[in-house]
Length: 534
Image 1 (cartoon, rainbow, N blue to C red):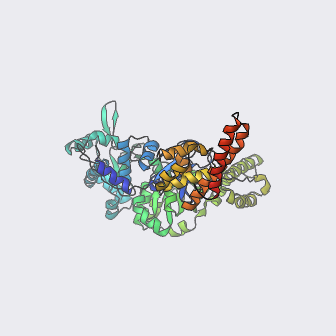
Image 2: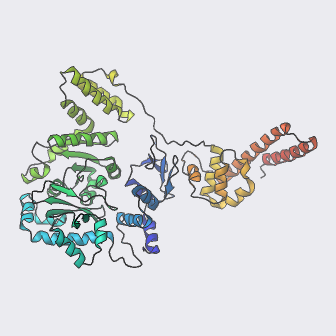
Image 3: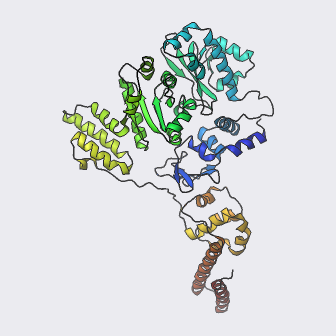
């Protein structure tokens, strides 16, 4: 078991905005951050993350909790697994009460040491790296190694007294019809690091003509290849300083670019750029250069990546290398890449030009198809940029702008629940100033509230984490009142309620004497409120 004090230490350093921002793209709105909820389908953002309260809450589906709860729900992990995942994100080594000699990352670190030793004695693998242009320092920096036979790897794990079941959970081994086997066999190994320099997975390059030239670990509880950038741990400092990131296609491209001084380069891991990568890019806040190979696969991947980035408002452009060459080859040939990166084509211009290159615009049918594809792309962009891009597309295609049918979108924080701001302000103010709670409860009975009586009851019951209460507390449109304004708001609510009750007396089927008695009491209460007395 994980020691409670270790969990508490982790909670004290974990930031919910940082954690959630690693999974979904957040946008600043007032004092909070918003996004489309990852736990239900929605078109307008109703998901809020509060840095001050260190919680998240969805106004739509009611999902809420802290950083650990988010990881549990998003990754579908149990509590201990979520704790370990969070600890790996913050480079914190957890302490266990018993039978836990190795944290998950320690197993992969030990395995990498084994791979690095094996590389020294495998001349074929070592020579391959040297012929690709890598020097000794680069091989050491990126921790490259060699994965031998499956039996050798299993024997190493057993002799090192490492838990092989944990190594299997982390992707190093898999179970087949003939039992356990190593995921990487007879391959040069590339350790994949988290941003805090902990190994979370491996990739491998065959040296035995295996049809799968490169493979990566499958996704595990600490590794998701669709949201990981290879080399980001080495590139992060340069990216933040230069405000520019270069995204390439493979391990060797990243390694050779770093060796040549382009240490702001990273790569996706056997997948195209995905929505899951965007939160990481958003946090880096840098200009993005997509630099892919010049073959058809590279061009199509560059178009898809550029489209995704343009649709999400990222600044940058695309670079296509000469057909048959990649960055690693060009660096080995001592070619200067600076002019190539500097002369990148802005995303939108690149997308339109490369899309049109796919069609014969002299053919009316193909021109119509090209127009439809360009129009759909423009319609997917931010409404602020749509008009300018329509002008550009109109000129380059020689088609009147009006045919692009630009639309407007108005995206704002939404909640399906009715909000009565006067009542909600009282609730939010007391929530934020809990020393007022007893005093307010004395003056303000539940029945006074017509819209938010349930939420007021939750407040009085001190059920502070209830999603219905958080709907009000995390709504930036609801104001927090000063103490004097709070008291005035309570008086106003009481006066309105008593006045309405006075009017209803005329329709009650009670004796005149009882009506007069009730009316006298209500008028006295109203009179006291008008004098400022609660």
